Length: 315
Image (cartoon, rainbow, N blue to C red; front, side, top):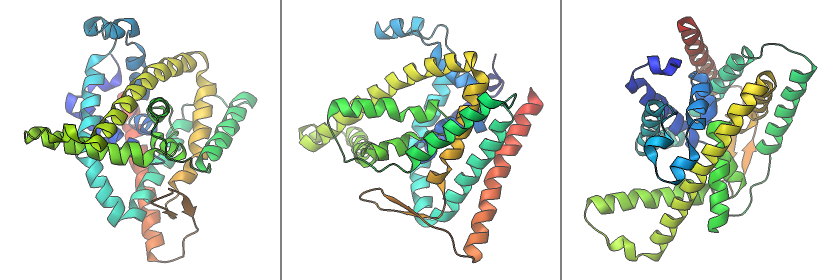
C-alpha cells in the first residue's frame, strides 16, 4: 500500500483541492503539486492500472479492479470541489494580490526543483543531456506565441488530450498549453462559467437554458473537452509509468530540466493582456513590495522542503 493510503481520506481530498486549484493557473502544473506533496508515482500507477477494455464496455467494477479506486475517487472529489470553491478564492486573490500569489507559486516550484534534484540518483552525460533538453523544451513552450481561438470540436478534443499533460507531466502546465493553443478563455472561462450557470438553473428548476443556442454550444464544447481530457489522462499515465520504470533517471532528469525551463511562465513580475493573453515580463524595482515578494518566494520554497522532509521521515 502506497504512502498516500496511510493518510486519511480528508487529506487525499485536500490534495485533490490543491491539485485542482493549481491546474487552473497558467504556468502551474498539477504534476508539480503531486511531486511536491509526494504522491505523484502513486497517482500515475493508479491511473495506469485502469482497464481500458472494461471501461469502454462500461464494466466499471472490472475497469477499476486493479486500480486504487480510493485514491482516484477522493482525489477526483477534491479536484471537483476546487472548481467550485478554492478556484473562485484564487481568482479573487490573483485580482487583489497578484504579485504575492505568483511569488508564492514561484517559490513552490523552486522548492519542487530542489526536491526533485534529490531523486536523480546519479549525474552523468546522459542525465545532464536530458536536463538540458528539458530546459530548452520548457523555454520554447514558455515563450511561444498564442494561436487564435478555435471552437471546432475535434480541435477542442485535442485540447483536452494535451491539457491533461499538466497533471501527468510535472512542469508542463495544462492551462498554459491552452493559452498557446488559443482556447484558454473558451474552455476554462466561458464554457466553465456556462456550466456553473446551468447547474444553478437545474437546482432552481429552470430548464429554459436548453433553448439557448449559445449555452448548448458551450455545453457541447465542455463535454468534448472533458472526453479529451479523460482520453489523455489514460494514455499519458500509461506512457509515463512505462518510461519511469525503464528510464527512471533519464525521465527524472528531463522533468527536472523541464520545470527549470518553465519557470519563466511563473515569473512574478509580469503583465498579461486579458484579450490576447500575451505575457510581458519585466525586472522589478527595488522597493518594499520587492522584498515582500521575495519573502513569499522563500515561504513557498520552505513549504515544499518541509513537506518533503516530513514524507521522507515516514518512509
